[in-house]
Amino acid sequence: MRLSKVFNEHSPVWQNPQALNSKVNAFITKTAEMNELALQQSTAMSGLTIAKNEKHLGVAEEADRIAGSIRSWAKDAGDTELREKLKFSPTDLRKGNSVTIIQRMDVILHAAQANAAGLAGHGVTQQDIDAFTNSRNELSDAFGVPRFGMTVRTQQTQQLHEICKEIDDLLKEHIDELMKTVKVAHPQFYKLYRAARKVYDYQGKKNKKGGGQNPPAGTLPPPQEPE
Image 1 (cartoon, helix red, strand yellow):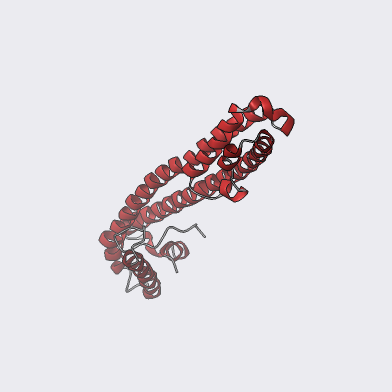
Image 2: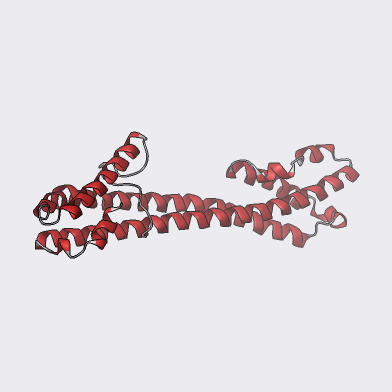
């Protein structure tokens, strides 16, 4: 049972002393802030990846069609070297790192531009070449967006760590100590609190041992969506 749930379900109990009230409210606020930031981070990266993949597949099909037409024209023209140069399979245009993919598309684009005059009869017009040029540039930009997204993600992760350190301080230095003031009057609430604290401690230590990216303080689990 998470601490926020324990506090929310027993709010009358921790209204006094005033210091406990203040620290618990700060904990709830910081936890909500952490969860919202984590959710934004996850949603943003997922959206960027989906958009990039969709763009990539579309441009790969466009490149494959143009490459096929150039190979056909090269066969008629007796240009064996050009045919060999453009022997990219559809998979070659879909798989690999972003730099390699763009390089392969550039080979196709340059071949199309250099032989534009003879390609119209093989289904590739200047308009097609211009459109492919734009698509290639847009894909290159799309490949760069996730890298920018990773920079933002790194900044958000640092924010999460800072928030988690604040929460860690609230728990260790204040709430753990102040909860002792209600232990006698509300033993069941105190028992639930300690059980929830053990979950935080265990999860934090497990993530630290596993080398994860969760807060190093050892008291907090990975950010979760509010219930």
